[in-house]
Length: 356
Ligand code: NAI
Ligand code: MG
Image (cartoon, protein in one colour):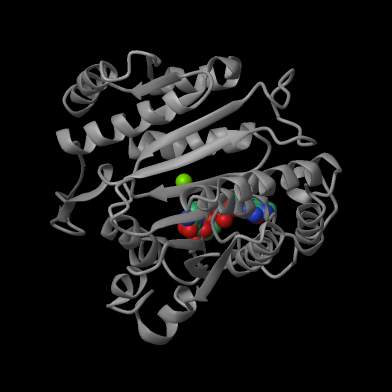
C-alpha cells in the first residue's frame, strides 16, 4: 500500500468547491485501485486568512509544505483584496520557492464538449503547453520611481538565464519525445525582442541536438494564435515563455470548450520539492457558492498529480471516467450542461467504481 501525503489548499471563491470534489474523486480512486491512498491535509490559507492575519499564508508556510509529496491547490482571488496581493502572497511564492519551473498544461477536446471552432472535434486538438514558470516576464524584476510625478517611471524587466532556458527546453523536448507524435513547437518573439528571445531560440536549437527523434519548429507568438485557431491539428507539444504561455493557454482552454476543464501542473522536475497541481481558472466569484463550478479541471489536474506520484494506472482510470461522464452529457452550465458540481462528481465516482 502506497500512501501519498498531499497538502490541500482550497483558498478562495470556487476553490473550496472544486477541491472538495477533487478530494472525493481521489478517495474513490484509492478504494477502487486498492494499492494506494492520497492522504489530504487541509490548509486554511487564502483571502480569509489574509483578512484575519494580514498575510495570505504564515511566514513558515513553505516550511510546512516542504515535507508533502504534492500540493493540491484551488484558486486565489477575492473581490476585496487586490489581485497582486493574493497572487504574490500565496501561489507565486509556492511556485518560486519550490522552483516549480515547468508549468504543464494539457488541452484536448473532451468527448461531448463542443469546440467553438467549426469542424474541429475531439482528437483534432490534443496539445500540451509547457510554460516556463520561474523567470521571463514574471520574474518580478523592475520597479517604480518618482511615484505620482509627471516623470514617474516603471520597469518590468524580463529575465532569461541560460540555466533557466536550457532546463525548460530539455523538459519540453523530453515531454515531446514521450508523446506519440514526437512533435515540438518552440514559441518565440525573437524578431522584436532581440536579446532574451534570441538566446531562447539559440538554446532551443542547441538542446534539440540531444533529441534527434523529435521534430521541432519555431513560431512567433502572434502567428501562433492564428495557427492554434486555423490549424490546431498541426500542433502537439508547445513550449513558451511565462507570459506567452500564460496567454496562449487561455486561448487553448477556450478552444477546448471552457476554462472550467483546463488543468495545470507546476512541476519541479528534479523532485527536490513538492509539485503543485491546480485548475487553470481563478476563484470565479461570479458563480461562487452556486454549486455549479465545473470540477473537471480539478479532476484532470488530480490525474496529473497521480501521474507525478507514480500512480499512472489510477490516472488513466480517472481520465477514462471523466471522458465517459462528459460523453454522457453530465456537465455543468459553462460547457452547455445542466448538472451541478455535485452531480458531475457523483457521476465520476460511479464511473470509477464501475471501471475495470
Ligand atoms: P476566473 O477564471 O475566476 O473566471 C473567468 C470566468 O470563467 C468567469 O465567468 C467564471 O465564472 C468562469 N469559470 C472559471 N472557472 C470555472 C469553473 N470551474 N466552472 C465554471 N465556470 C468557471 O477568472 P477571473 O474572473 O478573471 O478572475 C477572478 C479572480 O481569480 C481574480 O481575483 C483573479 O486574480 C483570480 N485568478 C486566480 C488564478 C489562480 O488562482 N491560479 C488564476 C486566474 C485568476
Ligand atoms: Mg492566466
